Image 1 (cartoon, one colour):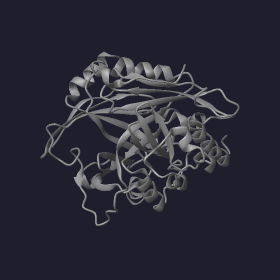
Image 2 (cartoon, rainbow, N blue to C red):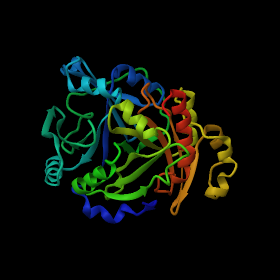
Image 3 (cartoon, rainbow, N blue to C red):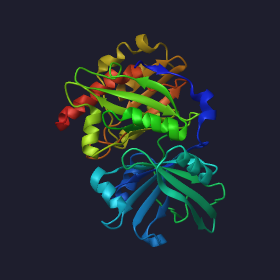
Image 4 (tube, helix red, strand yellow):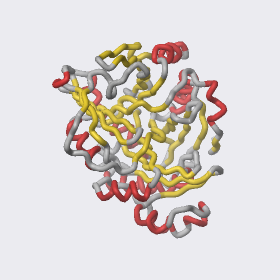
Length: 375
């Protein structure tokens, strides 16, 4: 398998149903109140909504955070008996739901089912004084789902059950814009199963493939395929481990997450230097590559608009494809289990995923694994 990329623009007709974009990402976490404070203070998200016992919802508490087009929902169980509790017990804090925004949730759910999906929730109408939202859901890898959300007849804040929050604590944003892509880790031998799922059930196409020769170091390797819907707004790389001398980052994730799930979320910015500098000042920790990476940077990627010095200071990586270049950087895991982390990405024309940075990135990850005793 070689590293190849094709344009998804010609594949819109293959989508099983139209997807307008990412509606929200919901995390199941052990303490949503405290997690919300972290994402507000460190990441600059605004607390805009809440759902919980005070609003008549007895089994959970959810905090709605927003920054530009990015919406995160942090949900904790109120008691130990629920599926939310089981999810947190097994996985720690992690992504449960990557929700799609659609125009017709009933038709989308029916189309997905006709193409082989397994339903997690039949189309359900949620109503309040602001109108109605129709929401359905299908299962994907592990305990993860895709909700399918229709909100064209809703004028409210987010979903029925949520109330607006007007908090005096509103830290400034950090320049984060929207979800660029979400990466899933699956077990050895299961990558192609889930590639076929996205092809058959949702009509996505494989726009990019990497084999274990492309993504490898002396010690570990993985394989990856990138799935995209027709308009390119939804992109899901899917990774599986490959044989190596030592435990790969995918093996480590699968061990500590107790199965497949979302490995990282890439969030777009228009000014990565400003965004990363602000995130670092608030305590967000990033992986670092050796300073030698920057000595030959312009020889590898050609001319760029940015000065190299601040990129080197912050540890921002650069890669180029046929359509331009991108800048990217990766956080350390954002919880004690070495599972979920984030990527900050700025695209200057490039539509790829930074293949030229894989070796440096993986070596940085391996250094962190070694510190944790997991390499």
